[in-house]
Image 1 (cartoon, helix red, strand yellow):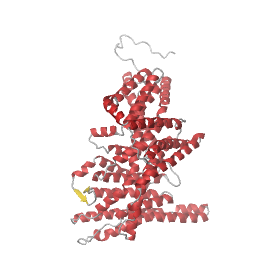
Image 2: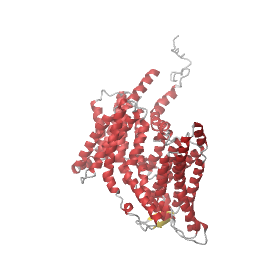
Image 3: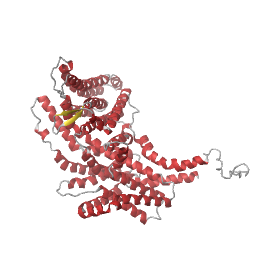
Image 4: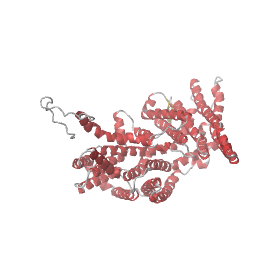
Length: 631
């Protein structure tokens, strides 16, 4: 039987009325509204938010009840700190305390209680997370606590009006300082003893031993008691001094602690720079894919219009300035051109292999490993200076030892980073070659990323060893890339299908977003009165939903609960440092952001282009086939 509906009676249906919908079909106006409004926006929503959150968000499922509550408390503290960082100027509208440093630091009155509370939450997360991890992780976290909090260990106090806090507070601070990491050391000893005993017992005895590990709960209680005694007593001493009309010493000690450990903030700054790149790629894919339903001819003209607007804003509108730049900085122009060509060549050579399911995990490992490696000289400085402070406090020495006052941070930067990059390049090539068999897709994904990042960073790091002042222009890099896309469009005008146009459009938008270094986020934030630090804040927030898939995994040395608590704990700790630095205007993180953008964001963006953008045409083909199938 024919499915064609009979013609409508002329007397019953007016000629201007829309045709009736078939059973099960949407009314025509609704379909038109969907095609006009929902269909173009849906790819942006899916690529930028829905898919990212589903695949790579922070996982809390699988945690114990105590771990879950602690993780939620950490996330609430983190959210509050991030909001406060964005509106940090509000802190400086009230009363300020001048702390005698060189240069002087002006401290908002309410900043110290917030910082001590945030440190309490951060170290609770870190120490609890370590308790569930391997003994090596526990030892590392315990050492970090001892080193980074050494300055706060001995608050200066004197008795005033027989106040209990001023008489017993310093003793409670010292007791908490040793009790919290001591619980971790005790857990290591208990684990070793339990392993030796279990080796002599049969399987039933081992099961009974595991069931009888009541000491874990006791150690967690000791950790909490120690941290409350340490940070709570510091806050108690500060409040009592203020009530008695004295300035006290806790705020000066906290300012000194932040100066000593602010190098721990650098990995977070680098991660945020790359997280903005990751978000830019998702947004670019969504914007480009929204045009996949148009015909190839219209898509080509839309891309041509996009290229015309971008080249006008970046090149033609500033043609005089570009002419002067090329005339005065020819070496920088040559370096930018050569860097672009070499980066494109490396990406082409190491990223053209079939997609694997290990891409997200490899991307996160690349992001966090490279961020820590780039910050390693500063982290080593933090540990050396902190160890010197521990020696001073324990041995009653009058001054810091020489290795702490003259630690070779600049030499580590100058010589250590190139050596580390060369080693990482060799490891990347080995992993990439190891994964060519197809059985180790994760190794090949990670190896290709390491090769791209180190092949980009190593020449620049070696150039820093010389006295040559060779510049580099991100804007010229973007202009050259855009001209290349325009050339491809012109040469292959008639042969480009919709998939190819979508890929070129995504590359055009992506490079525009990335090489503006997040200025577009700052611009959007500025429209509602937010400060420029919103770029870093956005990157930190996006890392929780877009680069935290590793928190769903678990291993014997690092269970899922430990991964979540350690990750959130580090974020809270580093954002607390950022919050203090921004509120006191101690220094700016612009230089660190620039370093993270150049050494990490640009090559990781290029790697993402090779691993993701070049496959957009496949997605478009799948979409077109689905549409044809529905037709």
